Length: 298
Image 1: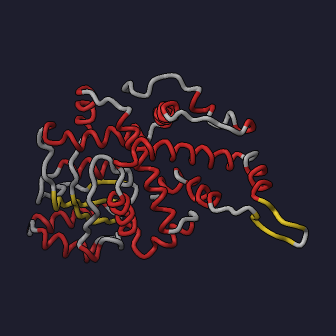
Image 2: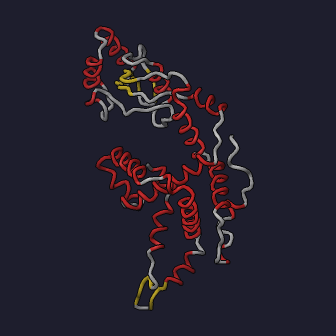
Image 3: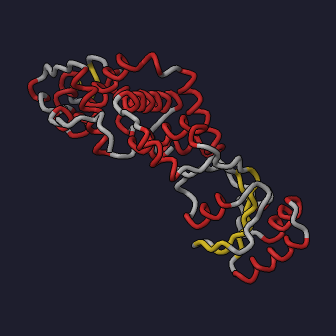
């Protein structure tokens, strides 16, 4: 969620500007008018960034608005709300968002995603390359201890009783991961796109079939893990996962700033944007000077 919050930082300011009246403020020294405020803001980098975002949102809304439903926005909003639980409101306020403004930021993000899809030609070569990295969403539980000898002792106890019920009991008794121990060590589901877990942990987890556990301790910076595969549907055939592969390819493109600049440039060029204020005539120069095609694959 923090990625979205930072990426959409200008959106909240956009809505604040739109709400300005003719007199912005009054003081004992006189009033501040909308015109004065505008003249001051347009000279600042933040003011120009807000205008860029407003222009882009207008063009994206026209081109892709019908593809981004309120149901999609609410789904992502609720996912983030569930993820952060009781701290959700606090996290939002830290970034200057209300529920309403965060939903608007999510909508902007989804509109841009539609633009990326529209300007990205996914080839079979790209699909095969992503397939080599692909792993399905799995669920695992783990027991974390500080010493290798402790982990080996727990593995021996599992060998004597290789059931998930025993694993959960051992996790509650021995795991130093206080956030998961009480739930038998169970972690949130993840796939190959996860960036929060150590690579050695993920490699060991993906190698397990459902119902298996790691026969040797898995070392990370946190200590030593014993991992149990709770759910693993198996990788299967590439043809069964084309939709997931396409989503991952698009997500990779969205994290490529150079590629995204090219996509935005194409969107703005197609939007017939005309800047009427001569002081802001170059506000989109970073995008409209980009001549290379965004539709070519990388």
